Image 1: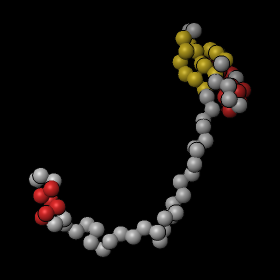
Image 2 (image 1 turned 90 degrees about the horizontal axis):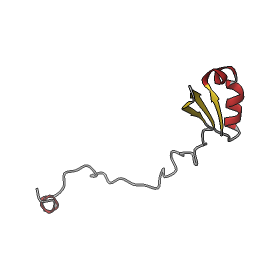
Image 3 (image 1 turned 90 degrees about the vertical axis):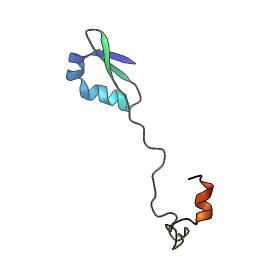
Image 4 (image 1 turned 135 degrees about the horizontal axis):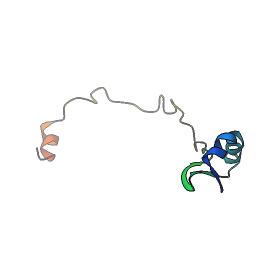
Length: 77
């Protein structure tokens, strides 16, 4: 892990970004104290595919109808 001061980071930003993109973390310091880390972003593991279950899931027409009194009594209202 490379450590650079903030002034050096300003002048070498593109080089430091290239290092981070290749997998090496870079720490930027001010007055010898670490402030931030430049690191590579991870690619999401999987993409979300919408519509995969289209036609496979069925919602009953009375899905949002009120529950019967017997069922409501089980909730202890």
